[in-house]
Length: 124
Image (cartoon, rainbow, N blue to C red; front, side):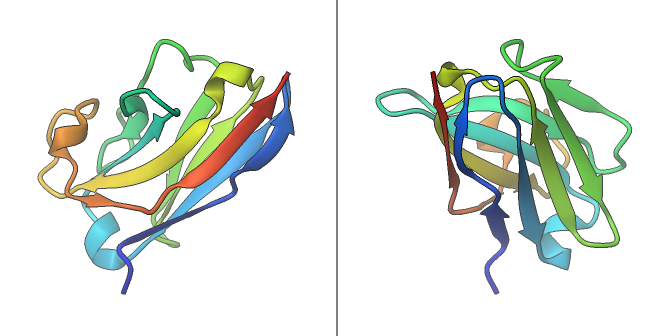
């Protein structure tokens, strides 16, 4: 069973919206911190947003704060990333990740499981 599967990426015009979904297994979702990261061509992978295991703590990169919202549906073992007011600089492959040890939300090295990524392209 694939631990994490992202979907919802695509091509959108600047100012538009997309909602990414990450379907997880029980092992990779229940009781775990969940995060979204992205990597643009030629750039390092960077933190986008994360939510702790209980859903009461969230963190966002400054570049997306106020535009992106992370949420989780425990009944569906799914985490979402609602992306509004998209900009060309948001273009990247977006990855979902799970941290089974509930460590610091923003550090990618803390995440044990990763999805395959979904491409988001924002045209100007």
